[in-house]
Image 1 (cartoon, rainbow, N blue to C red):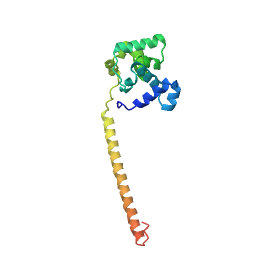
Image 2: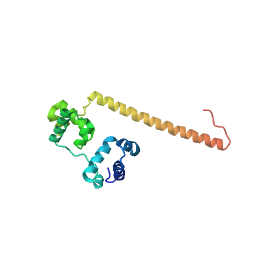
Image 3: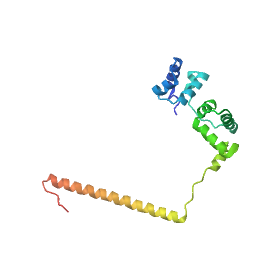
Image 4: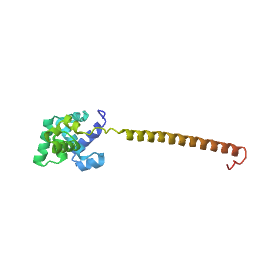
Length: 173
């Protein structure tokens, strides 16, 4: 995201909030999500309008930070949005931390351990490769045939147009 891309929109939102407008009003009129408005408000309150100039970024949080967030959610029954605001992450990110923690415990919050758990691309057998190669060749052949038919059709239409131009009727063959 460019540095100043949404700056004016964010400043306008914060000025409207200072005038007493609700988050719902901002959602509808500025087409911003409730979570975005709350995040911008938090940045605005901590650093003023200049804090809104800084681009949003997603830092790589430490395992201890993630663990603290997950335990806080579990203990205090926080919603994902509340946790996102409290721990400077999106609700979707928080949800992925929760899922990893519930599946693998504290080890699931480590990025390296999560990557190991991802499935590797399945290698195809020789029979599947042969079939795949046959299908690719068949596809190539059909594409070439289709291109040839389009050219023939264009030539026939061109010939018919020439014959009509000199007053002859095209043949029916």
